[in-house]
Amino acid sequence: MIKSKQIQNLDDYTGTILIPVFETYEKSIIPIEYHLASVSSKVFYGKKDTHYIIEKFDCTHVFIGLGKETDYKSIKTIFRRIAAKQSAIFSQKVTLVVNEKFDGNHVEAAVAGLVLGTYNLGHYKKTEKHPFLHKDFVLQYIAQKDFKDAIEKGMKIANAQLETFNLVDLPPNKVNPKYLAHWATEAGKKYGFEVTVFGKDKSTEVGLHSFLSVGKGSANEPQFIIMEYQPKNAKKHIGLVGKGITFDTGGLNIKTAGMVQMKCDMAGAAAVLGSMQLIADLKLPYRVTAIVPACENSVDAHSFMPSDVIQSYAGHSIEIIDTDAEGRLILADGLSYLIKNYKPETVIDLATLTGSAVGTFGYECAALFSNNDELCKALQKSGDEIGERLWQLPLWDAYKSDIESEIADVKNYSGKPVAGAISAAKFLEFFTDEHKSWAHLDIAGVAFGDDEFAKTKHATGYGVHLITKFIENL
Ligand code: BES
Ligand code: ZN
Ligand code: ZN
Image (cartoon, rainbow, N blue to C red):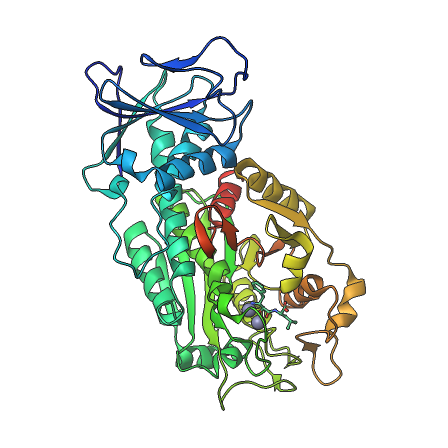
């Protein structure tokens, strides 16, 4: 982890100085200044998303505009931008001047942003490491108070999110089910949680038939990953499930559009894996059991077929209408297995489940489904605090007919191009054994997006901080 150090003044200092400032106004006659560097308000007055660099006294002064008021996500993005786009200024000493109006959350957001700014999508390019990642790098800060804890927390959050970025952005010929299982095992050793992995044989023996059906057409063996974090002082037991389709071709109902983006179909799994790292790293006093069913939805003579009837761990038979509605099949077994064997008090699943969630909310907000209003409110509140938004859609029984099958207990798709996110959620609900506190987050629109940090779509890390914050706020 990058080291940090509080300093008292900038006497004899040479290096970069990051100075976040709130907006004054364009015609103010008082310039914005710090450490004898000043800038006229005509040029820079702290407007959001602007910055101004002055070289003076062997120092690089970076004035960073925050706007009139700010929030967690804005601060994080602004600082990420500085680290990502002005990387040269990190090749010298860096001091963050903590604005007097900043609290611990603001400092945490700024540091998390700086660390995320080191991310480079060019995994397979011959590029140099961001200077911020150099092992001797120390982030200095000047503040009225001690912000050591906030800085450390910001770094831990960003480190977990960077892991999630890697897992999602690395290609599917690298991140296959075994890669996810290996990642979980190593993270478990490093951060302190137990990991058990069921391969094909063990999954068959246990009866994870629905999960196994999806992976049948792939040369990569499915892996059912179970993670258990059990601190001694645990207050409550939370269960997590993440969709781990390492690539979604659609199966025999092969995708005719958007297949190239389907390496992101394990973003729910990556969010759960990143959350486990962060929860354990922060030593949160809650028991957390997480399941990642990981497999690949491929095309082959062994692939499962539309009109197949398959079995499930819960003992419910499923008619396959569309092999591209595969996420719900692996989640069904993940949810049933978790609820039956671990009985967590609250269960949350995250999945890039439907194009319909993208059609409904676009790239700004995840679709939230839950049978528990208190849980909904708590998730939304946690999300709003850190800028990962959620909005609830209904689970009314009127939608149940969408998944009623004539040949089996349930079918995996209505066959109609309407209310797709809702009927998928109704399908999952069928496998929750009437659990009283369950929430499903369809993150298809928010997990993989376009932004200023790269030219192609890439991971956002959505869910890692949201889930951790939700547990912290319990
Ligand atoms: N992985 C997709 C959903 C998806 C879409 C994720 C866009 C990320 C971005 C999922 O498995 C899928 O194919 N869903 C189908 C279901 C349909 C066949 C019932 C969909 O939503 O179109
Ligand atoms: Zn699919
Ligand atoms: Zn999928």
